[in-house]
Image 1: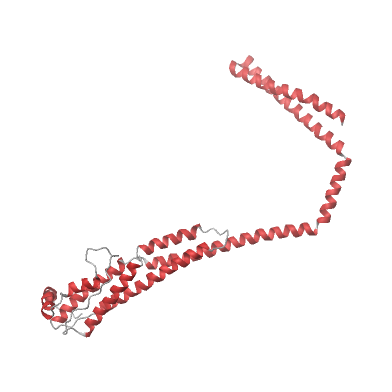
Image 2: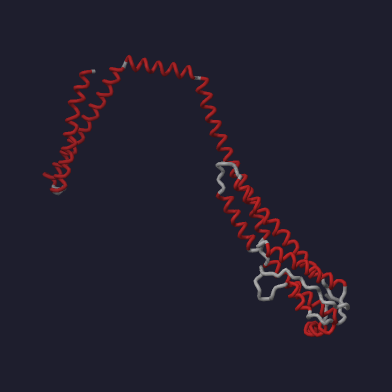
Length: 310
């Protein structure tokens, strides 16, 4: 748009409705544009109407004007398709409204003989088309990503990949398509990494199992000979082994008895000589030590008798 004094531009905007009304019996341009959008200014962004109204028959407008109007009609259809598919449309809707406002201003300039610039409308239409294509493509990518997660390698830890997928979905619903695409790619990377770790783990376990099986298979004769030798030695020296085990038990009980008797003497000294132990504690501990010593005294004769029989 060519530069012009501010007052002239304001005058053009204020007079645009009158010029449009005089040129055509149809609704003014703003009414047409909002009808083209098929939603009121206060309606939610995802509510649209399938009816598309024809542009007003204003023959004095330029071909660029009609190209811009037709482009907005196509953009409107794109927004409707996005809304019907439950895709986020707020970003595209804001772009559309800005383009409608620009179209109205440039139309007013053209109406009074000025030189309009509809490039912003054209760029906005292209941006809406790109948003529509990207939104549908991302929706398909989410479906593919979900299948990828379901069919991932068994045993793979997909916690991080699933969390990243959910974060990408949140970004997508908020209309941040670029961030959603980055997170989708990151989720694929995390799936691949989790599968690689799972395969490596499985390979390591399988390799270890095969190595053990191979080692046993190659040395089974040695193992059999060692086991037979151990069995023969155990049979030959079984009495000595049994005597050793019983003697060890006796020695262990004797040592435990000496320790308990020493603790009992210390307790008696603390109670009678030093007075550092109260009467209740003395009687409780004395009874406990006595029970343990009596239990040992019952076991020692039995073990000594078993030692004699071997």
